[in-house]
Length: 417
Ligand SMILES: [Zn+2]
Image (cartoon, rainbow, N blue to C red; front, side, top):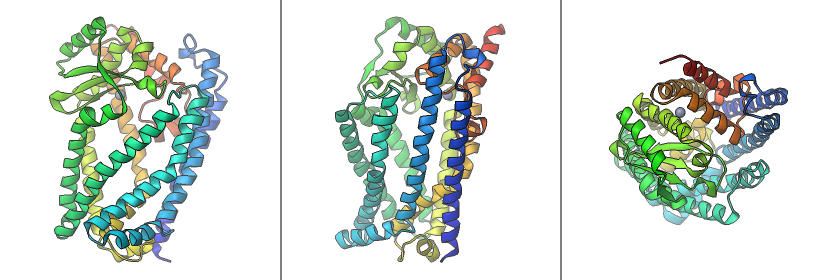
């Protein structure tokens, strides 16, 4: 057995063990705090709602524990189990060993992985979300979403795969630098196309019609010196009762999108404060910082891939007998997460710092009390647990625990500006 096979399997097992351990901690912690609403929330969140949020958090973790074990087995099967090698031989027999055969290889493995993951997608929507009353997706919508997603994956994934394979074939040992540049360009193109061409395939976007709310939003944007092209309402209620708001697009072409579910539950002042928080991520340069860090991490990934692709042991240790460009890409995509997870707590901590900064910005430019009220309403409606396990939260959560956010906002609301 290759040394790297042992290292890879050990890394996968360590990641799985940590996920299972954290999920177990989270289940135990929310259940231990199930019967007492935390002090700051007792006026708004009822004991019944609090207990339901605990049950939802525990059920989600139980579901994810099973999924984590299953995902690990799928990755093992595709790599050391010979799945990538078998589909590689099949693709070559169908389409040859050039860019066409390589693209077919990539698409066939990604399709196999998507098919294997489908049962979990069905259960998440129609069992887990259904049980807690969040699911509004009808089976027809679910099937249509899947088909559209697959078609999109075929077109976009196929184009990206063919592009990178062509670069690998036609440039020398520095191909990874050209591959990275092409990847960045492709990502920017998708970011640009998303609100215009892709998102409308899944949802309907209509201009915000509420004139009073629109006025409030325009006043906030003017106050903060921010340009957004348009404000849209998205029919999120077609699929789920969970509410949200986000910015999309590039540069001056940015759009603001509200889920209809969010507008239905928040007052205009609360909507304004939520928007001020989202806006802060741009004004405080969080978004460009994340883009730069993401680009640098993908550069490191491509450089590593450039080196690994030239090592025979990389293929042999991960279940592929013969070198090929498509196998290098696939093995890297499947094996990298087994090691890369070690940086996820750092990224989560960085993101939590941004969230606190965005809350403080919203408190300065909008209203801290309204944002606190909005968050409590969203926590309540989304059945977000108010008592996450601190270790679980530090590892996984991109947002600070509810109590910590509310505490700072309440403090800001009581201090005159
Ligand atoms: Zn945020």
